[in-house]
Amino acid sequence: MAMWVFGYGSLLWNPGFDVAESVIGTLPGYGRSFCMRSIHHRGTVEEPGLVLALDEQPKNACEGMALRVVEGQESETLAYLRARELISSAYVEKELAVQLTGGRTVTAVVYVIDEAHDQYCGDLPLEEQAQIIARAVGGRGPNTEYLYNTASHLAQVGLHDADLAWLHARVKELAT
Image (cartoon, rainbow, N blue to C red; front, side, top):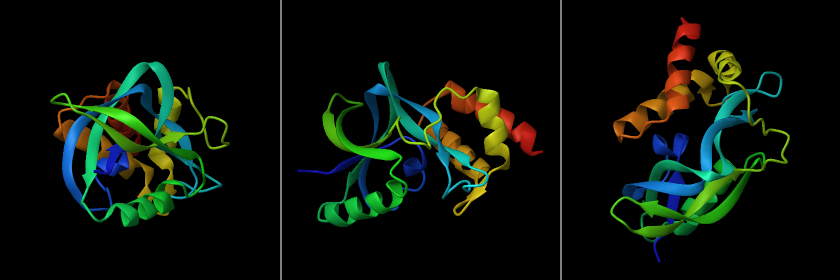
């Protein structure tokens, strides 16, 4: 059986594994938001950045990309993803149904936020998010780079996220 991974943030532009197929998909019951403080990749413990996470929102759905892993690379891909995504245990790994364009439904590995974790910061006002993203830098670079790459890759595949579009414009203003 094929292994699928649902990408909604950096997995869109930096999956880190070989992708056999990528299809726009919708994950019901979750919303994408900058609701996780980043203390490793896009910020530090002293000055956390923000990264995207999937927040459980029963009435919403998140559009992203379903990425099919190359056959035979499932174990190494899962090990890689766990080392990358579960670095601070703020994410929880789940297998959830993703509805693909064209009508198929697949089960995908999905990383969602643990709302009980101390890095969770849901419901931050967009302006506060912009202020944090504009200045934070972590081990993988500036927080702005993460936002810009994600927003641009969503646009490239024809997906619109109003909050990300607003944040992109506002952070560009702040960063100049």
